[in-house]
Length: 132
Image (cartoon, rainbow, N blue to C red; front, side):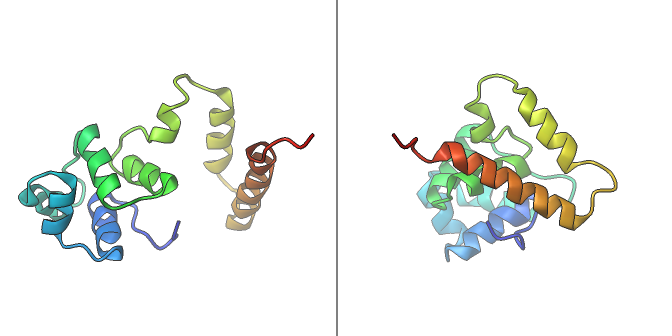
């Protein structure tokens, strides 16, 4: 996902919408919601976001054709549990280890980038089908 994408929910929704070339009205129609609601979400003042319920977030994600990581980022920006974490259906201590490292004070950006790369490399080992 593009690191230049905004972090705040209203701006991120607008960024995704503009990236695919949809108007607010068209996005609303594709998601099956009122166009005024999309406008209210995107126009919400900083610190006071309009946060949709989960079914609406799902419909917006579908209408925007978001990839699973993009969808998770939108949910996270909306302060909702991303679907990838929701599928775990339980707390996993590995998540705490990763969160602690990603938020460790004093870690440089280079160290964080290296940690993310190593984590991606490790995860890739189990993503691939096991060879016989």
